[in-house]
Image 1 (cartoon, helix red, strand yellow):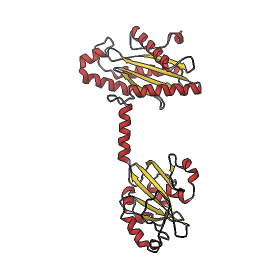
Image 2 (image 1 turned 120 degrees about the vertical axis):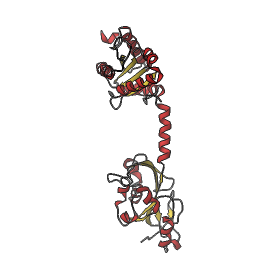
Image 3 (image 1 turned 30 degrees about the vertical axis):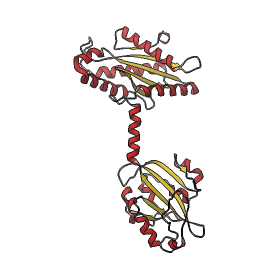
Image 4 (image 1 turned 135 degrees about the vertical axis):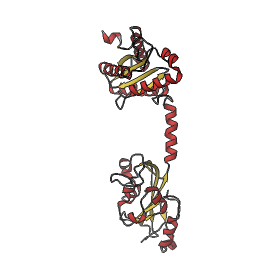
Length: 334
């Protein structure tokens, strides 16, 4: 039974419940059940007291399955972890950021809020939810329960992600765009400077692309670039970045990679593109790429722009020497 039902006020602050409602648990249950916002309430032992219809619809879990139990976490996570309501109940507000990264305390003492992805095992889909949890106090000032409200912000989050991708992704290939490349290169240069690690860069250019585009039309040229983009991306580690640098040129950032390692990656890319066997009127009869590689250890006497210039010079040399090859900086290759 509800020993201290809440009064329907905002849950962003601690709630003191009027005596009339404390004595009328049925009214409180009906009130919560009618809310369009998903709400559940835990008693002082962490057991579910209320699980309203909106919460059933969001989680795919019927109220009778969780009422009186401490298994409400199963509605949100694949593995056991506390909900915001649990943390408020356990008075763990101080270490909440360690338990649930991204969580924030509300204006009122012991109230918490969080926006995050939730697994939603029973619903069969991940959802991005905003959760708010607040304590409920009885007329005598003692803790009677904790209420948690939920808002489904998945559509808004996906729209935000889409907008961010438009700002950082190349529309044709899906790779990072030039803006993203520039930002990432400077960020990686700063990290290499702090950690005194090498930073490598590959500049990859499609050989004789103008002739290919003239022979196959713009649609054929676009398809060629997309296939090459996939080939290049397939050779990357998780922390590497492949970007469309411009036109038929791609750039690859290889953090903490030596020149020897960069050359190995470049040769794998060259072979992978050649194996696509995209028909070409060039002497090689297939589309190929030329690659310039460069490596630097970030320091006060050099900068990221010099790294790009060195890789560009190596690329020009690869073109000059006959294409379909990789080239290293002369000072390193000697």
